[in-house]
Image 1 (spheres, rainbow, N blue to C red):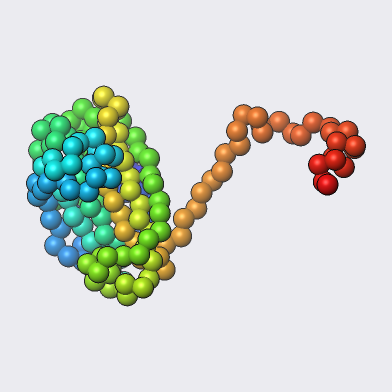
Image 2: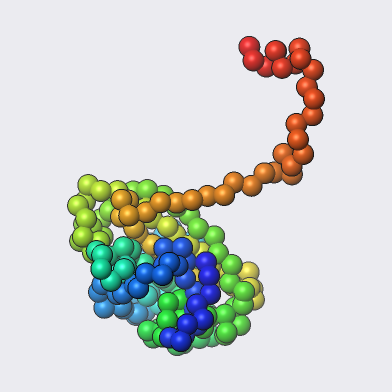
Length: 192
């Protein structure tokens, strides 16, 4: 994740949108209050199923390519109360996250859940892929720095042939020092 300080406005970009490519909306962006009926997303956002929440819908990607991703963000009602302008189309990518932080939720921290799955018929149509091509679903939960509660949940759906993930593995404290000398007989016992 990086900050955008471009002339078109402050905001944040996450890995898929952080290169020098020019990205565009492949369908008209939408923002509306809707009942949140997905139990998984409702639980992650910390609201009861059926709660009316602001839903931001986007299909984006590089100008010269097919749509890269579908992203749907659900903003917790307290976030919308604090920053009603999150419902409007921002001046730059991630502008609405900047607005949430400016409204008192600084710093938002994020955790992502990744899984491969088959696309729905609607998702395949929006991404211009066959329904037989798996997608990568990334669900990002943003937690408010003010109260340590979820403030937004964003689901990205990316065609499986358009994505690669890179993960840096960190050593646990127990693995920071070099291996101690192990007596030869112990090494021989372990290899059997």
